[in-house]
Length: 43
Image 1: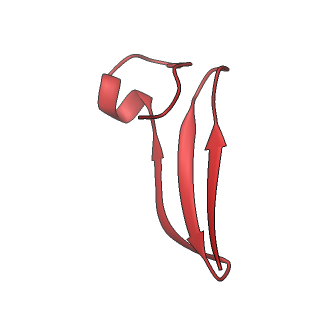
Image 2: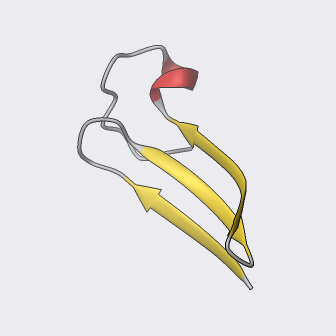
């Protein structure tokens, strides 16, 4: 089973993809926008 999780509209927005309970990918929005504590929706 795949699970896609989001944390958004608060400081440190992020997204994570899991497959059978194992993390496949995870990233914080600020790593892409280079804005500290970016609260935007992960793109």
